Image (tube, rainbow, N blue to C red; front, side, top):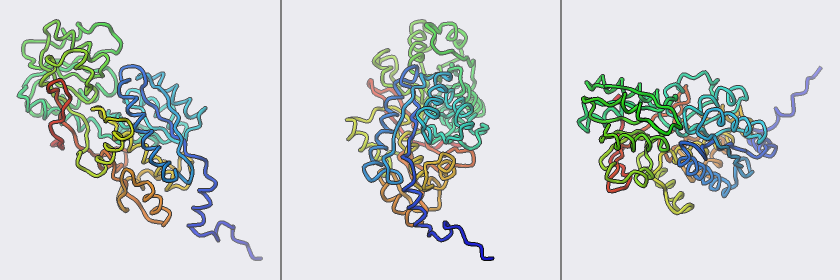
Length: 404
């Protein structure tokens, strides 16, 4: 008896891809960002970066021939509301993938409570906690920003270059704050420095004088503040008013120009900080900067806008490569579109990427934030920026790779 082959066996790869594209539902990406809470000032620009990516992609035909759609959710910069917003995006809005969250303290519970059990790929553009590297997430959590295991070294180098030999740390009591405080302490002490005190603080308090009293001592020359702007500015104000510290070293979460408006430029002048940051002269970075300014008028001096744009692009490219909006299939294509080998494509080149994929060729997305090659843990490499407050402005003084 002759057994007939399934019809699909007679369809060419190109015809199959075309068939899948025709059957695909529109790609819907959930944008999970803080529109309220401590990181509110970071949330809206990140949402705009996602909307810019979507506009560019849809202008050249969208994903699988359909406009990519956005559904947004407010994390409130807090784990419980963040998880609730993610559940709504997946179970009610029906998103195929999630961009977000920003805070590690929200991203991690979302990955464990929503992304992993619901099998939805998630890419964070700003969650830097070292905990994420070894998190049991079934490979559904990725990030387009380097781990704080690297930023801790970068922060140590910047602190040493200010000739501070003895510092105290006040850090926000979440995965981001503790992870970065530990990474900095390890690197700084290895280099011969001394950390006199390391004190956690809780969000939403009216006063932090108790934490400042624990951190302050005669030996400490500066305060390393690892936090977010809303409560961070309260700590700074009370430190200045109480005479606890006048020299400050900051991390990415405190790179906020509104601190100048709220505290006064003279009190922040010369303070330094670090932030994961791409080299501004790359074609991808230049395209993103020009496109963002063209769409919104100006590019704010906030971190993680380029990494937000890249996360949205990668999810869209992965769906295009998969030929379907199935969530697991998108997850399985993320490394294929982000890593070598393949022809390089960059920001603003979605049409080129589609043509290459339809021709059976591999692609390697080189992002606005630089190289976004995902390793086995979903982590990426990266460079860091040293920034300072100068004449009331946030100024980047250099881009560098930390000496690991």
